[in-house]
Amino acid sequence: MRLLLVIPASSAEAERSFSTLRRLKTWLRATMTQARLNFVCVLNVHSDFVDTLNLLDVAEQFVAKHDSRLELFGKFATDK
Image 1: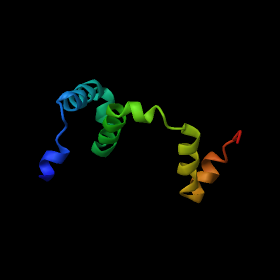
Image 2: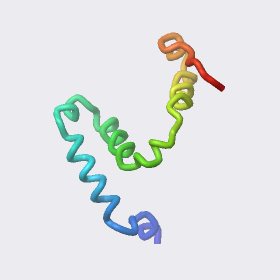
Image 3: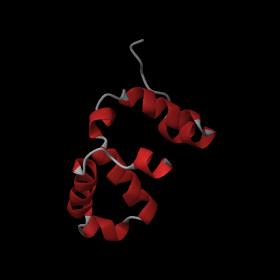
């Protein structure tokens, strides 16, 4: 039953994943770790969701995780 819940309704998502990976398998792939390649593939496949993200909020959350990041990147100017 669990297997049926995770299988996509169509093969379009799987085909999109392989197409994305083929585009990413360039000379840049040799400089990436496997984990980073996986993350980039997921971001590309789900680009419709990623496009809706507020990048300023993502950057602020990233910097807030560690004090060393705050020293390196500083605070972001917000129009809130």
